[in-house]
Image (cartoon, rainbow, N blue to C red; front, side):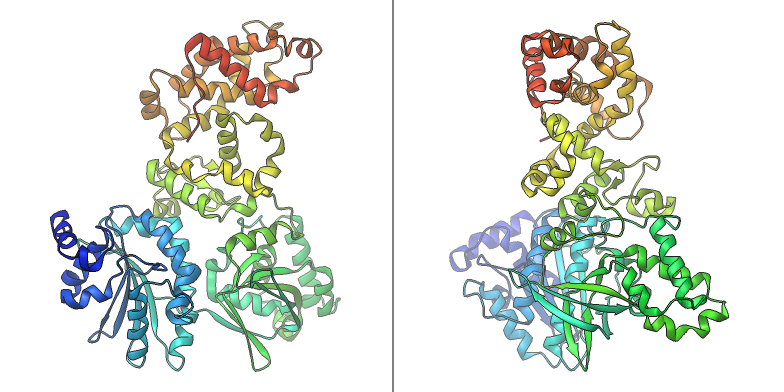
Length: 589
């Protein structure tokens, strides 16, 4: 077992020779104990400082023919691997397998790794990326963030395939504990490659090396990709399907029927009437008059793909479908294929594309890393599902939720409502009137979903989030304290929500409230009573004082309540609350 004492001893003995920081010696000891590598050899196979591109060490086991590439974290938290995985995806995999000499600042271990690769190219049978830490590998396997990053790294296998060229070499990504525990055994995924005849293809270069191909793709090829890749084909999609009864789905089904079953339309007409679809591929290569797409993912066009699948299944026994198979093969749609682009660029392009179905700006951020991290946070903290993708929660059964580690099955935290919760507790009420801009403006979005949110007490977030479920009741109770005096309250929903949240966050019994009511989506009677007491004895008085304030009284008398939706009115309420009860403005980090 690797202990603090052993790490301290290795650090003391070798730091004058090897340099680096104390945690670097965890990897050295792991190679010694797990793989039996002598120290004098292990020193050259572990990174001590320098630019690592996500690689902390390596080892080639000649007997097993396995090349192990390591990232080490002397921590029980699997979340520490996020940055390492991202570096591997962005640049590391390419540095290892394709362009090793482009960066003179890279560390020595990358040079040693490259030398090992070249020397043993003919005998390496499998490349294993191992992420070693002191925690539970099962937690890493359940993480949505790590699952996405893991698949992104697996999709870089085409670089390894190019390096080994004439033979198939497996690629495995796995999480290991230094104690010997391993996560569930995963079957190495083969590289998904599809040879596609793309008609009339043209290419456009982007500002930073991105590339976009445009042409016409056969519906049959889209269906084949969907069939072979399965649900992962939609992983980059910004939401789940809209359902078979949506107008667009019905229109596509009708068009398929007219071409394939009724034969009343020519196959070419379908392409004229369709807005087109968008794919992302890790690599696009011309091959013998066709194009090979590596690891394609659908960015836009889920309704088309799922409707085609449903249509073919519904008509599988229809002899007219069998007779018209060639007709189906001739049906094409306009297709954009984006490659060599990061997720942020792809998202920006998607936001500015026209859609067959209306897509809100918040839908387009569903696969952002911060959204995946929030999903992990709420699952890990109290087993509540965070619905970052529209319609996702309703598509999941009880077993699916259990697999995700979700204990709360009745409700999910929704992205848009969580955004409102953050804005209200930040005191930025004015931005609630421009929710689209919050998601369209990168600076505003990054301000709302700043990394510090991940450090917030999830129980406090949930306490504030659930206030929305009792706002009408709270407004009625305030109005009953004086109908003529508080006539405005039903039109002041957001400032009521914001001030009740501040009452909770400043409550003397906040810790008890968080423990009793901040771990489930339920809103029990005793929690509702706390909200009612805050609303009627605290918030009511703050709003009364603001309505009488010299800056707002004239507007209030005129019935112009727009000032109650401003940051300034919220700040005024908090100033009054500080003088009355020593409340301070508290944010969810």
